Amino acid sequence: MKNILILTFLLIKFNIIAQDISKENPLKYSGYLETYYSYDFNNPSNHERPSFFYNFNRHNEVNLNFGMLKATYNTDKVRGNFALMAGTYAQYNLAGEQGLLKNIYEANIGVRISKNKNIWIDAGVMPSHIGFESAIGRDCWNLTRSLLAENSPYYESGAKVSYISKNEKLNLNIFYLNGWQRIKRISGNQTPSLGTQLNYKPNSKITLNWSTYAGNEQSDSLKQMRYFNNFYGQFQITEKLGIIAGFDMGFQQIKKDTSAYYKWFAPIFMVQFKPTEKTRFAARGEYYDDEKGVIIATGTPNGFKTLAYSVNFDYLQTENVMWRIEGRGLNSKDQIFIKDNNQVKDNYFITTSLSISF
Image (cartoon, rainbow, N blue to C red; front, side):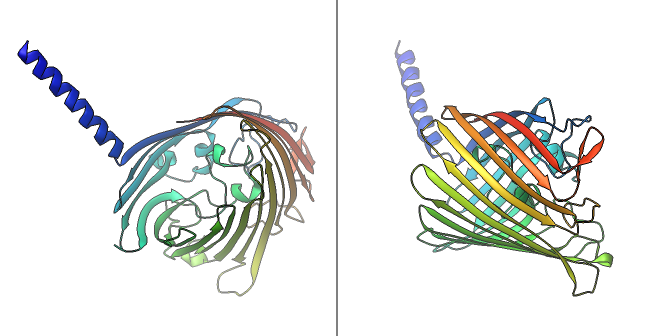
């Protein structure tokens, strides 16, 4: 009996200690899963939506857009993230990467290099510093991603130095990267790619951001420098109403050793309204102008000059489960879409999704 009592006491003590340790454990796990169905009224026979879409891009089939499992380690001096993913997002976004790298969402390590200031160095595969949208749909106001997001980096590989001010209003990042949305470098390319990000939050209702990128997207023998700027502001007008306004502009050398550049630009405006805790409405209008086909090549006289608009409704079944439905339309200056084997100027589609975060 005495031994049983001692053993019981030790088990209770061990359980209390284990609970205390778990509370302080710097290692945490999380996950996200989003399934979808999308119907394109142009009815593509191969079930693939236009090639400039990388999310929710399978027509008339139920599919997995993005599934992710993540481990995060975080202390005062060291941090790290490792996340694996699957789904059509990974299939199409990372088509140019090697083997198992196609399934890496995040893999990075960071160390704090200052005792008194919040300055870190991080290296590895990281989410992009460009734009306000990501692969995690729950964090985005719209179900589908904008043309801006789909045609600028979602991820990047390299190293960054980051600084956050004491009042946490200013976040400054400087990047050394392998290229424009690349883990694997282009063969024959030894040109450094650089990026910056300046994020300022004067208060809890306003976020202002300016991100840049500069790099060569060819081998060094064909060197064509690309310079890109991303601006956006997010404003929470009231507790229920918010807006985002953004503008992208890029330049790329026409050919090596020339001062002539092709350019592209894209403005966007979004509004979100939350009538209740469980429901949300959002609308988006945007325009993408890439006449010379630097990012989106069409082979048509006016290139890619497209107006896009969408409206979506979200319902939170529980705190971590969201159902969404969205209608979206695109109108282009040239006939760049295909319907019934004919070229047309318009593309309309409906998408619905169900996601869970844990």
